[in-house]
Image 1 (cartoon, rainbow, N blue to C red):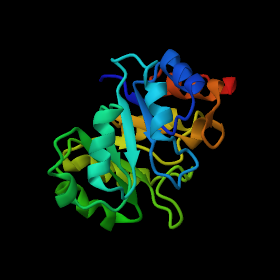
Image 2: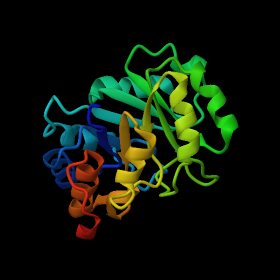
Image 3: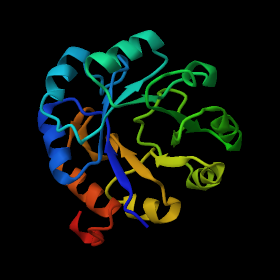
Length: 213
């Protein structure tokens, strides 16, 4: 079985971006939702992107954003993949002409019903929160994630992951990719290099000694 991919999300500064790349992150996530504590201004992102190698995909995270603005930003920056983390409807997203995937916040088993309506190859599964659209540090239901994995899409596991539980999460869910933001931070929007290192190594089964935390 191929190694799980790792996405470090909510990046806001060049130091963290370069650390994530150096430590082996496969995807980099940038949050363009203005109400997020990990929001990055598009102009700042455009400058920062100049230092990212072309082989590292840049994922833009959007929440209930005007889709024309999303496409404009995707072209201008540019973004390789679009992640929709709000209440976007399948009919809105299925007609997009760029790579994208939908995030589903798992409240209960009924949350799984909409997945098949989104015509994307990947689906991100996160914990449900009444207050925020992600980045809460709450653990997603792995039982629901395992049920979702039977629906024919590649699973991106998010929600409450950190360097202490990631090895168990990967072994339990066997996702295509894991996504982390708050779980490797020293404060919102600022990553902790050591936590990122442990997270990535344990996700990829390169380090199993939990005593090194």
